[in-house]
Length: 393
Ligand code: PLP
Image (cartoon, rainbow, N blue to C red; front, side, top):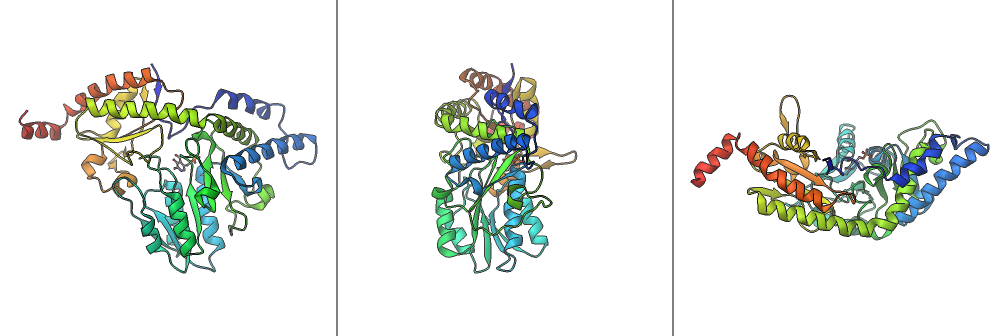
């Protein structure tokens, strides 16, 4: 049995997406910038994909920039705006639980002389819009807060945050919607964002292609230069098959998203209920309701996340952990650390992220093997033995 519960890492490409991409990997190989019929064919594929994405998020097609990934979209948003607005100010605001593709660009900008405010989150991983208000300054040029978190599934109050940013400053507002766009309503106008990042392989499209929405009039410099593509905002010959696949994945998403969400919520709730009933000393992380539909995250006391992953993998179940082992030490996740959970709890992090392909029989199988794995690992833990002694067992 092979069960895939790691859809935050990547999703399986949809068969219709795969089929749709094939001609672009074969006979339709023209460079979209070429001035002949081969080029025209590729150009039209790209523009139709751009229109699909624009429609999905309620933007104009010309506000979509294709990138190589969600990582590049995030880098472009943060560094591109910071550089373009240098003469206006050098203060930036972000949350303390961003994906590294947002977090690291902010760290880089700090080294270059920008000042960054890192917003705390509450126990459920939510940013308080009031904290945003208090952090805004005359020289704040950009605020970046992610829509949904990959490790804990929490969904931020983006509309409230954007209102606070707009009412109290002239700063631009960026959100990383890489994990949310496949499962939630993402509308740039309702959300009030100026920039928004997405990535195709998180919603059943191909890897190596993403997009950044940039509201018309937003000051932003390119990261990659040397060509006229994307109106000079992102140079480099387009990944035509990838872009075609992303457009098709969006088309499927528009039709299926609500149906998927209902299915995912029922599987997710069954997992949470089952784990709660079968395993003691687990701590679910993230917000219990304001969370991604197919996302379950928890910390299991007395064991390490990676040991669980290895034993689950041996039983045919692919999952993820927030805390990962390097060769020398266990590296605690910055997201779980920001929730103010004790280090010994953080190390037992487990993330189960579902897809519409998952079935209730897979949940049942997980709930059969998981308690056995937990007890096997706990039996090797001196801390668990101590806990049992204290409990008088
Ligand atoms: N942002 C979030 C929240 C993510 O979870 C990821 C990937 O896991 C990324 C950005 C990066 O996207 P990509 O894999 O397309 O570079």
